[in-house]
Amino acid sequence: MEVKVENLSKRWENFSLCDVNLRIKDGEYFIILGPTGAGKTLLLELIAGFHKPDSGRILIDGVDVTDLPPERRGIGYVPQDYMLFPHMTVYENVEFGLRMRAMPKNERERIVTEILEFMGLTHLRDRLPMTLSGGEMQKTAIARALVLRPKLLLLDEPLSALDANTQRLMRDELKRLHEELKVTVIHVTHNQVEAYVLADRLAVMRNGRIIQVGNPEEVFRRPKDTFIARFVGFENLFNARIIESRNGIAEFDLGGVRIEAVTDRTGECIVGIRPDDIIVSRQPLRSSMRNTLKGRISDFIDMGSLISLIVNVKSVTFVALITKRSFLEMGLKRGLDVYLSFKASAVHII
Image 1: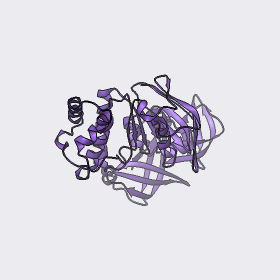
Image 2 (image 1 turned 90 degrees about the vertical axis):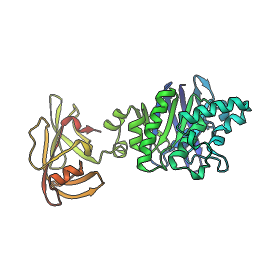
Image 3 (image 1 turned 120 degrees about the horizontal axis):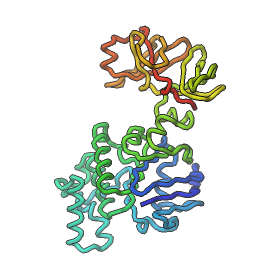
């Protein structure tokens, strides 16, 4: 099922959705990514039919559904808080939509039994929502949406209330559902890991506008502006001046620190380097990487299995991400000199 959003606008209290244009392909897993307050949920609810836009239109498989109620759009919707009926069992929650359609009992039983088995919920069929884990409630909410056989599935922050391990398991489950059912999915999140792992393509939203659309590699490696760069993990962003360019390789001055990057640009710009693209060593590396800088560790942040290392190179501060094992093996600590190495192609020009 293909979805087109054309020039969609909606004024909502102290917030406006402005001229949103999107095309989600049939069978695509599409993620709308952005910080809290970007307008992601409002856009999803407009597609679902919960609100009417002030201008623009929404087409599903070429049909203008802008004025149609949700039940006539052929969608399944899973809200952020699941909205399970607390007095109903898992079976009854999943069955509810079919009962509202007055489907015969034997047909309801067959379909619900199939979807419970598909979602791995059969053993929980007689349990009430209050007795379920977060992951089990999420799977029940998805099953309730899928039982109506929608061609389009809308997910609003589906993993935000789950712990890290359950999030990982549910990401795998969502990937499996998409691959097996071939349903078009529009998934709203602020979580970059979800977006990178699940999306075929994604759109980044800010202040009610779409500011970049592309596959995860494009958005995460070639962000369009500094806001997106920071949001997707470019912790190293510097004002730079190109002082020399030759054969597609430019030399930049970052305020006393010089690096090289692949570009034909000239003049002043902003450069970005992801912390995970920087290799940290105690001695200079023998490699083809064009950039090797000597600096001193000023601080570090222990993130469990990873360490965020803050290194001062003259007056410029870099952030590098290394494993805790490497940190311990190298005996790194504050005040120690280290070398930072990264490829010219790892430097992104904004």
